[in-house]
Length: 134
Length: 144
Image 1: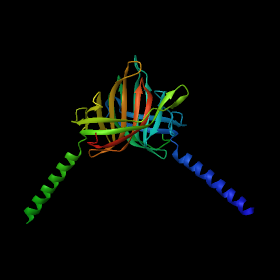
Image 2 (image 1 turned 180 degrees about the vertical axis):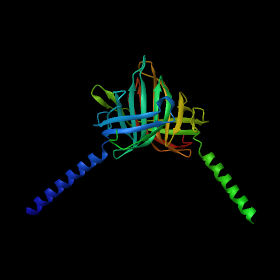
Image 3 (image 1 turned 30 degrees about the vertical axis):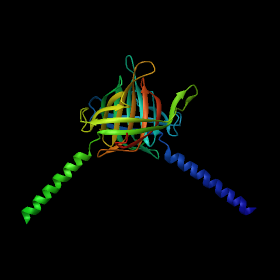
């Protein structure tokens, strides 16, 4: 009986630790400093804040905002991080897209684009800083 | 002998440069399979559509401002453009949204030396919002 109890406790600790580690290492929640270059009007620094709660249908997905625009979503699809920030415009809204590789809660360097009326009016290189850096 | 060696080195560099340029083109047809489709329904992002397969043709002529960029068309009917920006290829295809507004089918994946990464993402954007998303698996150049 003692052996069984010990085993059960050990298994319990093991499962809990595993789950906690996976959740902690995999979460994208936080703020990310982004620098966009070679994009004309879009050039500059952005602070992207994401909340990774799975609410957009993908295991890693949720809200995404920047201080200038406060509606948006992000999704990690097939290892690709995609953040769509709604850009309010007269008539139809535009979208500010930030995309890169996304893995284990980390975002790589990638590309940014602003799409209006179906066309990417501006696009550029996106360099990602350290999580929590803005 | 020294002249011969120099000539050989120059020729070698020329051949290498030429190969790099040729292999860098993204022009061609790529089969794209969409799976694990997710879209919002009345209960949230819980809608799931069927898998589908498409053919995207790219013409890499630098015409969109990036060294590797140009015209894109999917299934011979949805036209748009693509750009390789850093390590990422973005493909945009113009469609008509559910409210007859301009909308986009956006694909993103890695790209390097004329090769498109197999595992990519698909994101249909309407009115600034992600309306539909799926895993996008790219075939090799000439796969459709």
